[in-house]
Image (cartoon, rainbow, N blue to C red; front, side, top):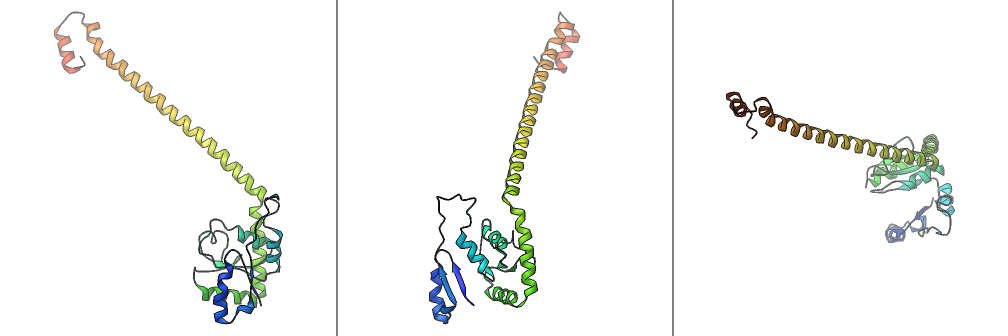
Length: 212
């Protein structure tokens, strides 16, 4: 078998491989750069990466953290079984025993066992490939575009609803304040209206409602 390591700084593993005497089983491929002159939507990933996926028996990725695992979707789309970790980002896409085999982060022994398992169990390998091909259809670009479209429209509706709610609260507060001022003024002037001249009842009223 041959390990093909692809990506930036992959060559750093060669010294360790030489010390173990397994360098002949490793091939290093440099980082694949994207041609910016091409349509990125129609040409991602680059064809050379697609060919590597499709020629691989297993896609093994011992990651410790991912933002979003596009690399897993690429492997699934190419029909390549996955061995990876339960790192953030990875566990969102790869379910152990369903569309890949998952190990704990840094558990290299268990990851090696998963690789060996796939090489020996054809039925399991075919199951992971089949489920991976089905899973990746959920991330079709048209589906994702529609999801973002619905998300933004909902956010806009909720923003307007929140704004309307805020305006209604302000209106109600202003109305309550004006009503309070009106009642306050009415209470102040009421005794003068009822008792135009000073009287015993007017004195009692001011005692009960000392507004002036």
